Image 1: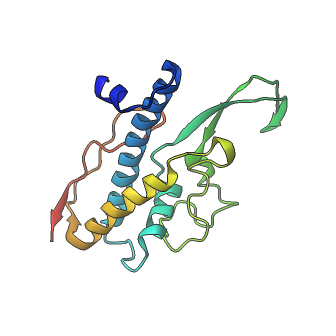
Image 2: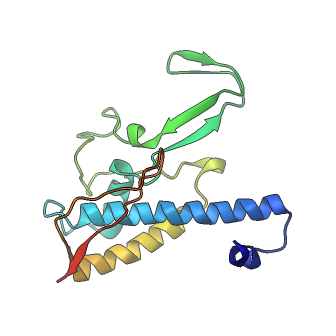
Length: 176
């Protein structure tokens, strides 16, 4: 923690705590994206002609590292047939929304050629993920190396126990 605090710019303690929290969350989520992408990429059924960006978009849709987020309603709203007063907590499930058959044909199929990709996973607007481009750049670089140099070892992927994050504990690969 001392090393992270030393790297933070001078700011009030709550700002520095938020910056460190964002960094830690980004690290876990990016690791989850890389692990899920490696799992999907190194399967025999995945088309090798799909570009890295298309592969990542489909991973974000089908197997997002951040499965859900919480928000609080600002105003009264009707959602899912229920009236919610202002101040109501709402759980937004990216993993469920990204498998909506009205939005995605064959929602359970891994199809990197699918138009639209994982648009919901990073959120949008003022509450969207501030690190989406960095996460995609890091994951893309790792995936490019995996595509070029590795093959997957057929072992099951295990994940850290967490209610909203999906982070693989290991992904085993072999050098070609």
